[in-house]
Length: 411
Image 1 (cartoon, one colour):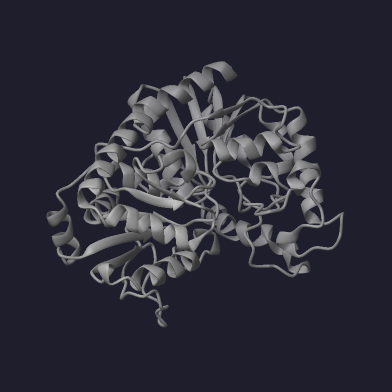
Image 2: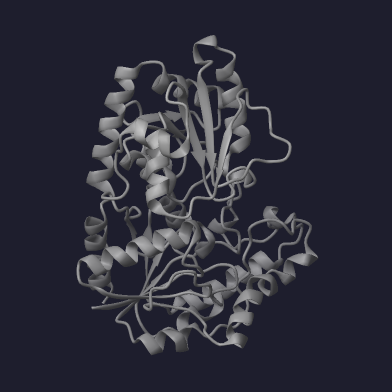
């Protein structure tokens, strides 16, 4: 079987998830190729535009795609109209796959009105909500995607026939005749897709993101701390994501409140927060502790060591399609504290492999950190259960087999 995966990038959160599926498929003998617009790896089976003109156009596409947003007030929101014509059908023909596997298709990568031009079955893994909205990647409290969008709050729009409704209609027209099977990495995202007007009549599967549990595994904590120069006598709370402190969806503001509450208890004077995915800001926020910032870690082994160096990982996100840092942390034997909302609700077993706090209560998030840190024997039991959960649910070969079955069903 030949499969072509499509994702705008081969790095970043969605790029990493796509790359892991790609490698997992190769492990079980599936002939997989990836098409991207922006390539940072050397793998020859990952194909990107290669002429100077094509590369320049790929760099410009995300900005041109967002050009219509200048007519709205919220130009900084994560919103992809997906209106630019693309060359993806001809690029797909060059790889001649049996099945197409869509992933993160926003940022101008896909002309959403041309999905029906692909003449092969499409398996669309949803990294977020964009595929079934009028352009936003997360709808927050808006339920416009259940109807036909319009008056988009993400754009501060007061008009029914705004760009979100126009985008919704382009998708509806293109999707009607397209052969699409939906895969969501979490039950939360699957439910959102089932509620949507665009996908409510589609087959929707739930398959979590794959993880190489031979890399993401427990390491001896003192060794891991030596690597990063972390005090062995401190209790380490880890937090991280791409744009960890600047993306409101990642919930750094909620974490700040939780840490300030924790710091008022003298029992936790020895806590050391560590943040990855972000450099130390010029004006360090008051979080009750002196945090360390590692910046962006570029390889899996370094990240696995950092998880192993921590006593607990906190994922305070308001919304996550899956919650990749949570599954990575579990695989390294580090319990996770997160809100009982969106993707992490599937990953963390409450009081078994971590703690699920009441959304979006920073006080209960602080309670979760206390639950993990205040009893070392309990933390060790949580650690064992965390590793077991990761091995049972996220191992690459098992995830690849699930996708292979979906491909056969699509065919």
